[in-house]
Length: 334
Image (cartoon, rainbow, N blue to C red; front, side):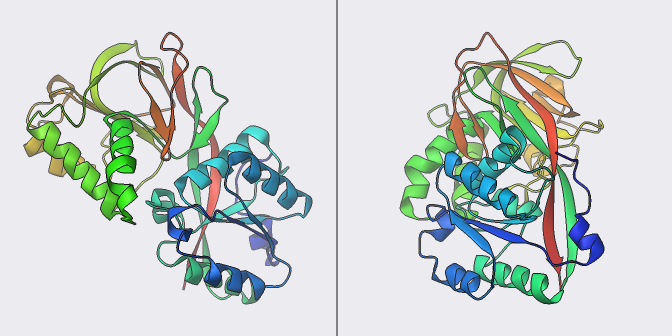
């Protein structure tokens, strides 16, 4: 499999060969897919498959590879994108990586908002089809590193966002208490983070509890930390436009952690949530942010990759997060 560059069909001006993955179970698709299916029906020759589980995603991509698809449109949420990336980089059905176009079709859709098409999935798909047929619009190719996560007891997974401690607990809370009420978009995660920040600011342990984690970044010595939250991502924008990284190293992975009971939290949050340094955001006060190429974590609890939840088989072996690949994503300018 070759590294990502500007796709040959864009350089040559040839029409792309499209494949569309549809996850009917994704949050944004549960109200129906009539518009998506109508758009696909109007575009002759497009490959399309409904998928729900990772084995179905892999089977669909293997079919697309046999049909020489070079642009894969993902009509699903962050978990569907994670399944696509894992299939592409772990199972490798394509000799040459396809270009990816991610529609905002999930409950949160962090990946689509950062490297894909925000807004109506039907309108975005129509724009992609119109560009593929007529060349209307200017393609922008976003090259982005992809996380590889290797945890004890699990095969490697690939994605864009990894979180543990309070992040893992927050997602559990979201599914139990907020997502079940039908809230879509960024409102549900926004309410969850507000609940988290309230608990952390006033040291209420009923919602979020800290976890002891041993952390080793690149060649630095391991450090035992009682973590309130820990995240690693290659996304430049999280939900609500948050960018909670302020490390200045050259590594591809953005790492941020908050120690239990961080000092000056209320004064520090407005800056660090936007990626700006703050005089209080120092390790001695419980704030850590670095860029790295490999992060090794000994975890006693679970973790999430793009909203999907996992638990390591043991804490003796490290869960390793590293920059394992790079993907190319399509955006279209008018």
